[in-house]
Image 1 (spheres, rainbow, N blue to C red):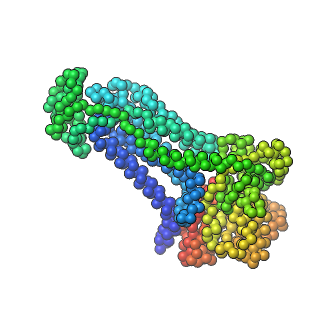
Image 2 (cartoon, rainbow, N blue to C red):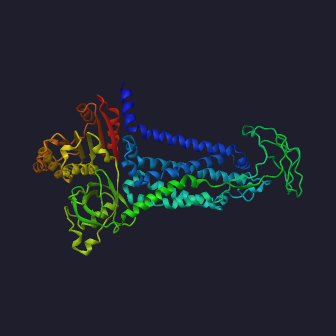
Image 3 (tube, rainbow, N blue to C red):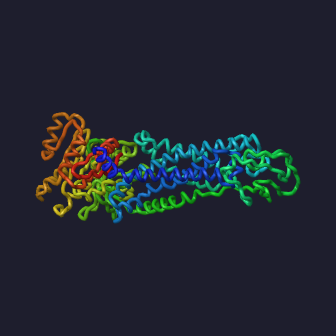
Length: 594
């Protein structure tokens, strides 16, 4: 019974996501297998296959996998397209939950590209060696080498596909190395800059694909060939050898087939060879293999470029920083005005500061959205990285706390302090208003998507008409002072709920995971008495117990669980949501991590 409950919860929260992954795995397997068999058994590749062997099929199979994933890896990064799908009227809950993991699918495709590229590269190194060792002196055009014993490295470096392949491997290794989690967290700038090499990667990928390579195909298949399964066993004897040109000894067309007498040479370009009593009227003619990469990558690349162009065009509106406030814990609160900017709770924007870098864009959640009374919006930035640290120093010009920047219109120097805003875009937190019961779980600065929602509740004059039964707000921080980022908002919202006779709408639980000095705790309670009974010191939430209590209080209800914080927190919450089941109360987990 417990296994059945877990399976139901797992399918509810992860079923569609893993179904897509399974479909993707099957698609990759089909593409690789079909390409492998095509290059192994198609008659037009018979001659080159006799030289290269299985490494030909492996290199071509991985090339097909690369084509597939180089197209798919771009689609999750089309932010405008993803946002349109998320907010479309036909978008269902399960589909929106799938869109929450676009970045994960992008990383999965990227990892596959790296692995397939390594195998593809090694396969072509073996191909170059085989071209050198198994040089065919009778059908010279089928060879990738110029002569027998040619240096394989020269074969690779002496062709356009070889040179571009080396460049692609160098670019890909650079991007993959700087994409590791340890690099992203410790030096995000390095990750961001090297990821811009994707433009170089796709340029050389197209050049690599359209350039004539060493692999050749037979262009004049005018004879009926034996069935492929008999190629390695068929006993075929050339009764009359081909008439070609220069002296030499030959191995006949088919595998394991021996010519009984040496060739007879002349100037006539025809031959008679018995293949199941079939007459060959002309020698084989070889040509380079055509390019198909553009069919796989072209459309996704076009969609991505259109999406990127649209985003860049929307950046043109001017912005103005109204004020900047520093909070405890190196957190910047920036209030910005942008002409025509509109956002919904839970959405995020990309921010660029031209004075720091004209290329770097960083995502931040809108912590307070524009309203009809106030057209400005607010973002909170935790200054923990290189870029955010430089932004903190640039905007405040001071290392002291609570330094407030004057309005930008006051001086020309302030007018130069501007941000470029791109967005907004949808996030997993955008579904909060779609549930009657919501559980908001935040870790540290991950509280910002939920504060936008709480601001929305506070500024909404028709709050008593909202179709919301209850909101559980659980926020964890290491430092008690971090709660001061939004304590005034929480207190004002509580007072408003009391005035509307809805005090039970919001349940707040503030967890301080580290010990708190007694004097600091007394000062906090004195400043915010409404939050005294909602404060938990020195312990984390017991997720199984907490979520089970919520389920028991809302039987037969779909409960939306929204989590934003460290990756470990999001993983634990999702596992508990899949495991817990109580009286038909279904937990739907939407999470994002940083």
